[in-house]
Amino acid sequence: KLTADRMSKSKREAPHLTLGMNVDMTEATKLRDSLNVTYTDIIVRATALALKKHPIMNSTLKGDKIVLRDQVNIGIAVARGDDLLVPVIHAADNLSLKEISFVTRDLVERTRNDQLTEKDVLDGTFTVSNLGMYGISFFTPIINPPEAAILGVGEITKTPVVINDQIRIREQLILSLS
Image (cartoon, one colour):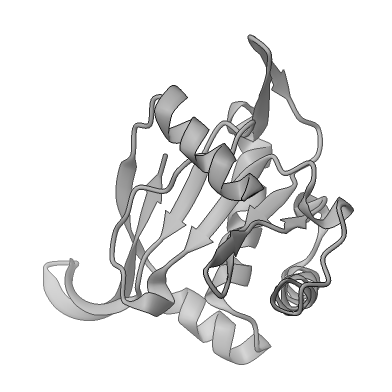
C-alpha cells in the first residue's frame, strides 16, 4: 500500500519525462554467462558507476531542496504476487559485480518470502526496474519519491545492427530513463 501510494503521488505531482536508448548487450551477455550473474546485476553495477559520474541523478528532494547524496543506494523493483516492493542495494557504488549479485539474490529471496526489514527498503537514491523478463520492450517507469529518477530495463532481443557498414546480429535492449 505504501509503494502504491507513493507511486500514485509521484505520477500525479512529479513531471515525468522519459528518454529511451538502445543498448548493445552482446558483451554483457558474455559477462553474464562467464560470471553467473544476471542482467539486472550488470545494469545495477553500470548504473552505480554512472551515478558517481553524474551526481545530480543521485539526488533526492527534501521539501523544495535538491540534496546530492554521497552514497549510491540503488533500489530494485521486485514483484511479490500482486505487490511491488523496492529493496535497496546500499553503497552499490562500492560493491563489485559479484557482490551486487549476492546482495540482489538475497534481497529478492527475502522480498518474496516477506522477510525484508525496514533498513532494506530505506534510503534509496535511484531505482532500476527490469521488465524485460516479461517480454516488455519499453515502458515509462514511475519515479520512486524522493528519488530524482528511475531506469526502466526492457527485453533483450536479437536485432540486426549496422557495424562498419555490415549487418550484424546483436543482443539489444531499450533503457528508459524517467
